[in-house]
Length: 253
Image 1 (cartoon, rainbow, N blue to C red):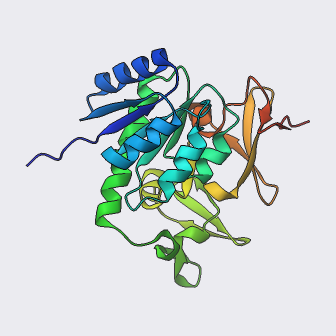
Image 2: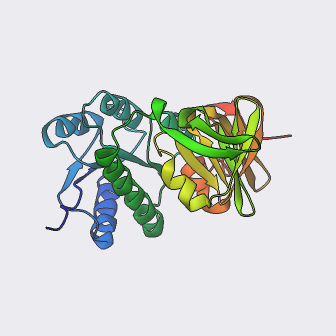
């Protein structure tokens, strides 16, 4: 029996934006039932009634912001996957802390939407087969003295080193003989986000996003600086045009 395609709720206060997103969703062929909401308050009511699998959520809406809608979703027993779709880059860090699957800047590209939706579908599939809380999920890694068991939520960031992955946590690091794709599939996207072809960061370790010229960086809470790859810029916080994050200066001197 074929698996039922996920339902989607498109939330945006602009009619043209809703129509365009609906057309993009139809072109992907990934969705089943599609609902529309013209603002945050209507979205909350439809979420209560319809319990959508995935929400495409604008941020800046006059009645109730998308961030508030996402906060409401966190209190649900069956939390939907949230993909922010917005013209503003300044809310990316808040979005990731609210466990958003992705953060796409308008005009949304079909290829990026498809990638985000496929990730959201994979997340939901994993949540049904592996209900283990993130705080207790573990990884086995080979250390110089043997095999260690690491708690996933303790990992701060990960970087690729040729055929290995280096896991950073609590001032120490461990090398794992594993591919980026394989390791990424084991790290819950509600906790981690990929910012570069060779870097994954735990969401709550991101203090801000800065830019220097055309390059963008994540600044971690301990003051570290990690590069953002061009193809991941929309997902993280594409501040190339404004150079600001949440009203604070983010340009690296």
